[in-house]
Structure formats: C-alpha cells, structure tokens
Amino acid sequence: VIQKDLDNNQELLAEPFQTAMRVFGENNPYERLKELTRGQKIGKKDLVRFVENLEKVPLDFKERMKLLTPETYVGLAQELVDLYFQQNKK
Image 1 (spheres, rainbow, N blue to C red):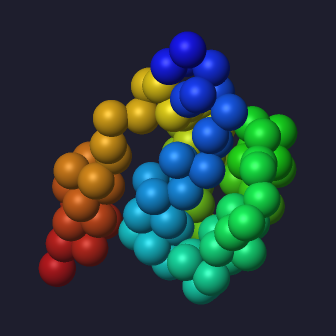
Image 2: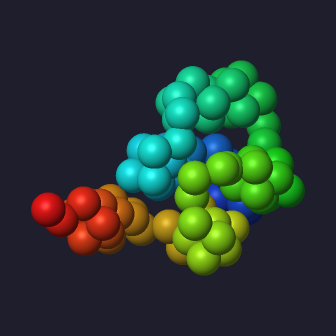
C-alpha cells in the first residue's frame, strides 16, 4: 500500500528538483515546479520530460535526478549544499 502511494505521488520530488534548480541557477524554479505540479497528478514521464528541458543543470546531474523516486529520495540538500560551495570557492 505504501509503495503504491509513493509511486502515485511523484510530486514529492518537487522539493529536491527545486533545490537542484536553485543550485545550478535555473530561472524561477519554484514557479516552474508549481506550474507542473499544482492541482494535478504527474507521472514519472512528466518529471523526466521536465528534467530534460532544464538548461543549466549539468547532464550527469540530470541523469541522477531522473533516477530519483519518491521511495529512494531521502534528501539531496546536504549534497547540493556541498556541491554549491565546491563550485563557488573563491
């Protein structure tokens, strides 16, 4: 039952996607994800298509994003913060 609920709620991945978009400088991450997810059910194909259209997220990170599932997502925030500081060292 829990697995089915997770599979049917792909919008749970909006949070890590928004974080990744912010780290890599995508424009309007909150608004774009709100438009995708607000008031509608989205499937894995919708998320993959969304990720493929991101312009500033590196290809290798896009591939990692596409592999995320609500079941396997435990939080990318720490990793993304570390990556941000690595890329923005002065």
